Amino acid sequence: MDSGAAAARAAEKLCRRCKGSYDPSANTRLSCRFHPSLFVCRRHDDQKRYYELRDGDPPYAAKFYDCCGAEDPDAPGCTTDFHRSYDDAQAQDQ
Image (cartoon, rainbow, N blue to C red):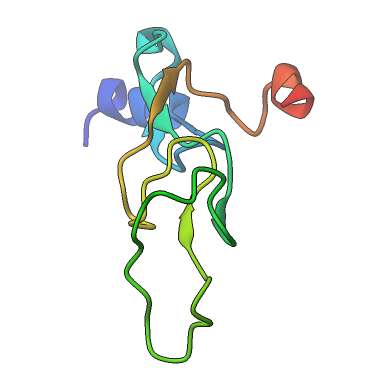
């Protein structure tokens, strides 16, 4: 590995939202895709959707992201913004 590639690799940071590594010099408002809310297990507010229940789930259980309603825990994020590093002072605000 040449010194330029090593320096670029050393400059990468880890995003606290999407857990991906990124180059701070290429960070834009569309760089990070994440869910701003948690994946929850409870009744959904709209009560109109049907949810796939697993064995042992109570009949009222619904599992989804609270922000967008996606039922798959591996669903791509519903929001985009700048990556936020664990090192950033502004990361502590969010």
